Length: 205
Image (cartoon, rainbow, N blue to C red):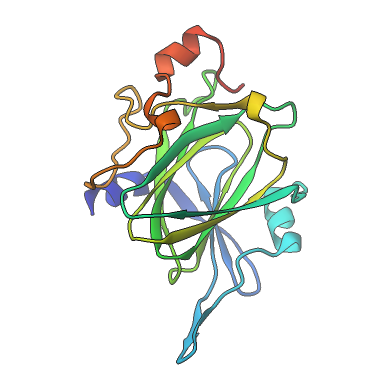
Protein backbone atom coordinates (compact mmCIF):
# COMPACT_ATOMS: atom_id res chain seq x y z
CA UNK A 1 0.00 0.00 0.00
CA UNK A 2 2.39 2.77 -1.18
CA UNK A 3 -0.22 5.49 -0.58
CA UNK A 4 -0.24 4.55 3.10
CA UNK A 5 3.54 4.28 3.41
CA UNK A 6 4.01 7.70 1.81
CA UNK A 7 1.91 9.38 4.46
CA UNK A 8 3.65 7.61 7.36
CA UNK A 9 6.72 9.84 7.08
CA UNK A 10 4.64 12.63 8.60
CA UNK A 11 3.75 10.69 11.75
CA UNK A 12 5.49 11.65 14.96
CA UNK A 13 6.37 9.41 17.89
CA UNK A 14 3.87 8.27 20.51
CA UNK A 15 3.66 11.17 22.89
CA UNK A 16 0.98 10.19 25.38
CA UNK A 17 -0.34 6.92 26.74
CA UNK A 18 -3.64 6.82 28.55
CA UNK A 19 -5.10 4.10 30.70
CA UNK A 20 -6.20 2.01 27.70
CA UNK A 21 -5.39 4.15 24.67
CA UNK A 22 -2.50 5.80 22.85
CA UNK A 23 -2.40 9.23 21.26
CA UNK A 24 -0.02 9.85 18.34
CA UNK A 25 0.77 13.42 17.34
CA UNK A 26 0.73 13.85 13.56
CA UNK A 27 2.97 16.02 11.43
CA UNK A 28 0.41 18.77 10.85
CA UNK A 29 0.04 21.04 13.86
CA UNK A 30 -2.84 20.18 16.14
CA UNK A 31 -3.84 16.88 14.50
CA UNK A 32 -3.79 13.59 16.41
CA UNK A 33 -4.29 9.88 15.88
CA UNK A 34 -6.06 7.95 18.64
CA UNK A 35 -5.66 4.17 19.02
CA UNK A 36 -7.81 2.08 21.34
CA UNK A 37 -8.07 -1.71 21.78
CA UNK A 38 -10.80 -3.58 19.93
CA UNK A 39 -12.42 -6.35 21.98
CA UNK A 40 -13.72 -9.17 19.78
CA UNK A 41 -15.68 -12.33 20.47
CA UNK A 42 -18.35 -14.44 18.82
CA UNK A 43 -20.87 -11.62 19.09
CA UNK A 44 -18.75 -9.05 17.25
CA UNK A 45 -16.56 -6.13 18.33
CA UNK A 46 -16.50 -3.46 21.02
CA UNK A 47 -14.26 -0.44 21.48
CA UNK A 48 -14.19 2.89 23.25
CA UNK A 49 -13.61 5.65 20.69
CA UNK A 50 -13.93 8.88 22.67
CA UNK A 51 -13.33 9.84 26.30
CA UNK A 52 -13.59 13.58 26.89
CA UNK A 53 -11.28 13.77 29.92
CA UNK A 54 -8.34 12.09 28.17
CA UNK A 55 -8.95 13.86 24.87
CA UNK A 56 -8.98 17.26 26.53
CA UNK A 57 -5.92 16.44 28.61
CA UNK A 58 -3.92 15.56 25.50
CA UNK A 59 -5.21 18.38 23.31
CA UNK A 60 -4.84 20.93 26.07
CA UNK A 61 -8.24 22.36 25.26
CA UNK A 62 -11.92 21.64 25.70
CA UNK A 63 -13.79 19.54 23.18
CA UNK A 64 -17.44 20.52 23.28
CA UNK A 65 -19.57 18.29 21.07
CA UNK A 66 -21.97 20.59 19.22
CA UNK A 67 -23.06 18.15 16.53
CA UNK A 68 -22.66 14.46 15.65
CA UNK A 69 -22.84 13.13 12.07
CA UNK A 70 -22.92 9.72 10.39
CA UNK A 71 -22.17 9.02 6.72
CA UNK A 72 -22.49 5.73 4.84
CA UNK A 73 -20.46 5.31 1.65
CA UNK A 74 -20.00 2.68 -1.03
CA UNK A 75 -16.52 1.57 -2.09
CA UNK A 76 -14.78 4.33 -4.05
CA UNK A 77 -16.92 7.20 -2.75
CA UNK A 78 -14.66 10.18 -2.09
CA UNK A 79 -15.89 12.96 0.19
CA UNK A 80 -14.00 16.25 0.54
CA UNK A 81 -11.80 18.21 0.76
CA UNK A 82 -14.01 20.17 3.18
CA UNK A 83 -13.31 22.89 5.73
CA UNK A 84 -15.20 25.57 7.62
CA UNK A 85 -14.48 29.28 7.92
CA UNK A 86 -16.98 29.71 10.75
CA UNK A 87 -15.88 32.20 13.41
CA UNK A 88 -15.17 29.45 15.95
CA UNK A 89 -13.96 26.99 13.32
CA UNK A 90 -14.98 23.34 13.35
CA UNK A 91 -12.85 20.64 14.93
CA UNK A 92 -13.68 17.03 14.07
CA UNK A 93 -13.23 13.73 15.91
CA UNK A 94 -13.62 11.02 13.27
CA UNK A 95 -13.74 7.22 13.27
CA UNK A 96 -15.04 4.40 11.11
CA UNK A 97 -17.69 2.25 12.80
CA UNK A 98 -18.14 -0.27 9.96
CA UNK A 99 -16.09 -1.05 6.87
CA UNK A 100 -12.92 0.93 6.17
CA UNK A 101 -11.86 4.32 4.84
CA UNK A 102 -8.65 6.13 3.98
CA UNK A 103 -8.90 9.43 5.83
CA UNK A 104 -6.90 12.50 4.83
CA UNK A 105 -6.00 15.68 6.71
CA UNK A 106 -4.71 18.61 4.60
CA UNK A 107 -3.04 21.79 5.78
CA UNK A 108 -4.73 24.62 3.85
CA UNK A 109 -3.30 27.52 5.86
CA UNK A 110 -1.04 29.62 3.57
CA UNK A 111 0.98 30.96 6.52
CA UNK A 112 1.61 27.51 8.00
CA UNK A 113 5.07 25.87 7.69
CA UNK A 114 3.27 22.70 6.59
CA UNK A 115 1.02 24.40 4.00
CA UNK A 116 -0.20 21.87 1.38
CA UNK A 117 1.04 18.90 3.42
CA UNK A 118 -1.37 15.97 3.70
CA UNK A 119 -1.49 12.90 5.93
CA UNK A 120 -3.49 9.76 5.21
CA UNK A 121 -4.63 7.26 7.86
CA UNK A 122 -6.68 4.10 7.40
CA UNK A 123 -9.62 3.96 9.80
CA UNK A 124 -11.66 0.78 10.07
CA UNK A 125 -14.13 -0.99 12.29
CA UNK A 126 -11.42 -3.33 13.58
CA UNK A 127 -8.23 -1.27 13.85
CA UNK A 128 -9.40 0.89 16.77
CA UNK A 129 -8.27 4.21 15.29
CA UNK A 130 -9.81 7.67 15.30
CA UNK A 131 -8.40 11.06 14.31
CA UNK A 132 -8.74 14.61 15.54
CA UNK A 133 -8.88 17.22 12.77
CA UNK A 134 -8.47 20.65 14.35
CA UNK A 135 -10.15 23.80 13.17
CA UNK A 136 -8.85 25.33 9.93
CA UNK A 137 -7.56 22.10 8.39
CA UNK A 138 -9.07 20.35 5.38
CA UNK A 139 -10.60 16.90 5.68
CA UNK A 140 -11.49 14.21 3.14
CA UNK A 141 -11.80 10.44 2.88
CA UNK A 142 -12.40 7.65 0.40
CA UNK A 143 -14.34 4.51 1.26
CA UNK A 144 -12.34 1.29 0.84
CA UNK A 145 -15.35 -1.01 1.27
CA UNK A 146 -19.05 -0.95 0.57
CA UNK A 147 -21.25 0.48 3.31
CA UNK A 148 -18.44 2.10 5.27
CA UNK A 149 -19.95 3.97 8.22
CA UNK A 150 -18.10 7.09 9.38
CA UNK A 151 -19.04 8.91 12.58
CA UNK A 152 -17.99 12.47 13.40
CA UNK A 153 -18.12 14.56 16.54
CA UNK A 154 -18.00 18.29 15.69
CA UNK A 155 -17.07 21.25 17.88
CA UNK A 156 -19.50 23.56 16.03
CA UNK A 157 -22.69 22.95 14.05
CA UNK A 158 -22.81 22.84 10.27
CA UNK A 159 -23.01 26.32 8.74
CA UNK A 160 -23.66 26.24 4.96
CA UNK A 161 -22.45 29.80 4.38
CA UNK A 162 -19.10 29.03 6.05
CA UNK A 163 -18.55 25.63 4.41
CA UNK A 164 -15.94 25.47 1.64
CA UNK A 165 -14.16 22.83 -0.38
CA UNK A 166 -11.23 22.17 -2.69
CA UNK A 167 -11.20 19.56 -5.42
CA UNK A 168 -9.72 16.39 -3.87
CA UNK A 169 -7.82 15.51 -7.05
CA UNK A 170 -6.15 18.91 -7.35
CA UNK A 171 -2.63 18.36 -8.71
CA UNK A 172 -1.33 21.20 -6.54
CA UNK A 173 -1.95 19.03 -3.46
CA UNK A 174 -1.08 15.75 -5.20
CA UNK A 175 -2.79 13.56 -2.62
CA UNK A 176 -1.81 9.91 -3.18
CA UNK A 177 -5.29 8.43 -3.21
CA UNK A 178 -5.70 4.64 -3.38
CA UNK A 179 -6.18 3.17 -6.85
CA UNK A 180 -9.97 2.98 -6.91
CA UNK A 181 -12.69 4.04 -9.29
CA UNK A 182 -13.66 7.26 -7.53
CA UNK A 183 -17.20 8.55 -7.13
CA UNK A 184 -17.61 12.23 -6.18
CA UNK A 185 -20.70 14.31 -5.51
CA UNK A 186 -21.57 17.06 -7.97
CA UNK A 187 -20.47 19.59 -5.37
CA UNK A 188 -17.06 18.00 -4.81
CA UNK A 189 -16.40 17.30 -8.50
CA UNK A 190 -17.00 20.97 -9.31
CA UNK A 191 -15.07 22.32 -6.30
CA UNK A 192 -12.43 24.99 -7.02
CA UNK A 193 -8.70 24.40 -7.07
CA UNK A 194 -6.33 25.47 -4.32
CA UNK A 195 -5.01 28.30 -6.53
CA UNK A 196 -8.54 29.60 -7.06
CA UNK A 197 -9.20 29.65 -3.32
CA UNK A 198 -5.91 31.47 -2.72
CA UNK A 199 -6.92 34.08 -5.29
CA UNK A 200 -10.35 34.44 -3.71
CA UNK A 201 -8.81 34.65 -0.23
CA UNK A 202 -11.03 31.86 1.06
CA UNK A 203 -8.46 29.69 2.82
CA UNK A 204 -8.22 29.20 6.59
CA UNK A 205 -5.81 31.26 8.67
